[in-house]
Length: 155
Ligand SMILES: CC(C)(COP(=O)(O)OP(=O)(O)OC[C@H]1O[C@@H](n2cnc3c(N)ncnc32)[C@H](O)[C@@H]1OP(=O)(O)O)[C@@H](O)C(=O)NCCC(=O)NCCS
Image 1 (cartoon, rainbow, N blue to C red):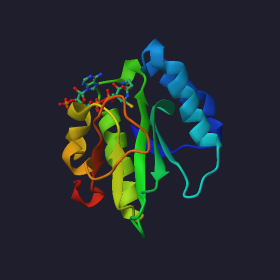
Image 2 (image 1 turned 45 degrees about the horizontal axis):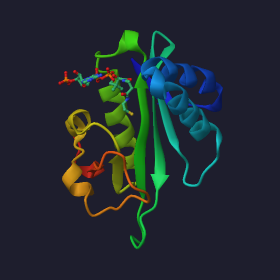
Image 3 (image 1 turned 45 degrees about the vertical axis):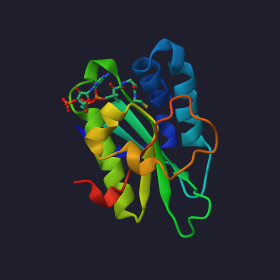
C-alpha cells in the first residue's frame, strides 16, 4: 500500500471512494465536500492524501486548515473526511493514512490537529476529547464531542 498526495486529477476517484465508503444517507454530501475541498484553493492549503493498492486508489483523507480566535501564531488543521472503499476496509489502510497525514502536518510545523468523529475510533491515534475542551467550535455540534491531538505526541 502506498500513500501519495492527491491532485485535482483524482477528483472522480475521491468522489467514488466516499460514495462507496459512507452510508447512503451521508455519502453524497461527504463526497461533494471532499471534491470541493480538493478543487477550491485556500491558504493555507487543504492537504489531501490517497492510498493506493496495486496502483488503484482505495482510500482518501483530507485535512483542512483551521483558525482559533486569540491563539496568535497558531497552525491547526482538522481531519475530514476519511474514507476507505469497503473491499479494503479493516486492513489498516485508514490507520496508516491518519498517522501519515498527522506526521506530515507535524513535520511541517502544524501545532494541533482536530477531528470531529467517533472517539473510540480516533482515540487509537492520540486524539482525546478532553484536550479539545478549551477550543470552542464556531457553531453548535450535533454530537458534543471534539478531539484534539498534539501531533508531537503521536508515535
Ligand atoms: C472508518 C474507516 C476510514 C476505517 O478505515 P479502515 O482502513 O477500515 O481502518 P483500519 O483497518 O485502519 O482499522 C483501524 C481500527 O478501527 C477499527 N475499525 C475499522 N472500521 C471500523 C468501523 N466501521 N467501525 C468500528 N471500528 C472500525 C478496526 O477494527 C481497527 O481496530 P484495531 O486497530 O483495534 O484492529 C473506514 O471503515 C470507512 O471508510 N468507513 C466509512 C466512512 C467513515 O466512517 N469515515 C470516518 C469518519 S469521517
